[in-house]
Structures are given as structure tokens and as C-alpha cells.
Length: 145
Figure 1 (cartoon, rainbow, N blue to C red):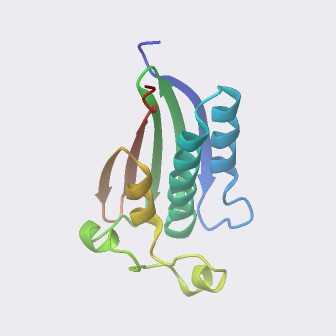
Figure 2 (figure 1 turned 120 degrees about the vertical axis):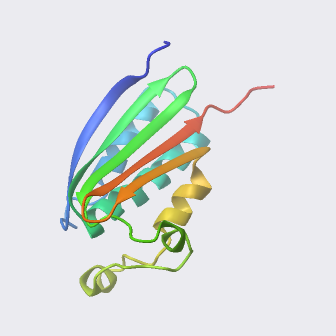
């Protein structure tokens, strides 16, 4: 398969903590059905969950898109929201701009972007203040010896 296949495009509603995590679960189940390596699925699932929670906590709405091709797995998380004013600061573990409500529910510890970076093989973030954020997370298949 040379062209990436979009397997899922899942809308994510901002500020809806009731359904938060469902997109990441759907991504995980889809990759399991495809027989993807379990260690890779774990990394994809963690990064996707963190990206989904960032949409829920910080944006009006967004989407998670799963693509699979011969080179690996790509997950796009895109939102319409407040954007990230200082990306370098946001990549710092423990830094958070989450609301008091999100923190009271146990979210917004400032580990989202650092965890995404740890889990991905390639990470691209494009953000504009008062417009939104696009996060492209790429994961390569493990090599076999």
C-alpha cells in the first residue's frame, strides 16, 4: 500500500469530558484489528489520548484522523481553539494552561505534549493563537531482525 489510507476520522467535542478518550480507544481497536505490533499500538494510543484530551481541554472542537501505510501509522489531531501562545513552554513537563474545572477532574497536569513527544517517532505541531492547532504524530513500524 503506497498511499496512506484514512481508516478513521473522529470528531472530538471541546469541553466534553463525558466522551473524552473514545477517539483514542477507537484508534487502538482499529490498529488491533489490523494486527499492528502491540508495543506500537501502545505508543499510538498514549499519544492519541493525550492529543484528544488537549482538544477537549483547550479547544471548541476538533478531530482525530488515523492513517496507515507501508511505512507506519500517522495520527492527525486538529482543532479550532485558542492555539498555543508559546510552544516551547508548552513542551515543558508540568506547564499547563488548563482550566480549574479540568484540573479539578484530574486533567491538565502539563504532561500532554511531553508525553506525545516521547511516544512518537516524528512530531510536527502547527499552531496559531485564536485559530487552532494541528498535531501530526508519526510512528514507524518496528524493524524485525
